[in-house]
Image 1 (cartoon, helix red, strand yellow):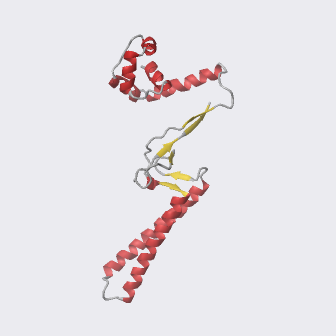
Image 2: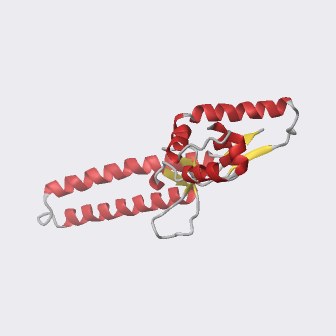
Image 3: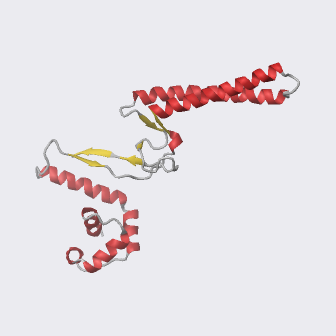
Amino acid sequence: MLKIYLYGYLNKVQSSRRLEREAQRNIELMWLTGRLAPDFKTIANFRRDNGDAIRAVCSEFVVLCRQLSLFGQATVAIDGSKFKAVNNRDRNYTEHKAVKRIEQVEASIERYLAALDRADREASDVPQVRVEQIREKIAGLRGQMRFLKDMAAQVEAAPDHQVSLTDTDARSMNSSGRGTGADSDVIARSVPI
């Protein structure tokens, strides 16, 4: 099963169903597996159940290559694959997003303060309960403002000027579907070899 998985990785065959078909028709893979042709579900279960072991085999392979002096000192492997990240767009902060959110909160505070001013001028028209609700909202918005200013400072201190709260490796990317609500995130890791 590991041979099938590695064959798929090296030949850019990611689908379990396509690996099943390759194992049945590709002579190279037949030779590699001794004519074993597992079904797609078995291949998928192997990947799911043995992720840690597959990573361990890959790291041992890198160690073996180093021992055989197959790698130079300056070689770096970078995985630039795009994955839908766990992080919500609202939990990812860049310099632009932090400034924009601060402006939105300031505008909301201004609207609520204007409503309080109207309530003071027209005391009989606005009930006291509504005034208290507005004051609570202003207090909440001021707390949010403090959080956003702290976040802006963290973003500025971050090496790539991005902070993701849920998934720290997630990075916001521009997507071709601007304005569609579909925002891609990338998880890219560089591994020195």
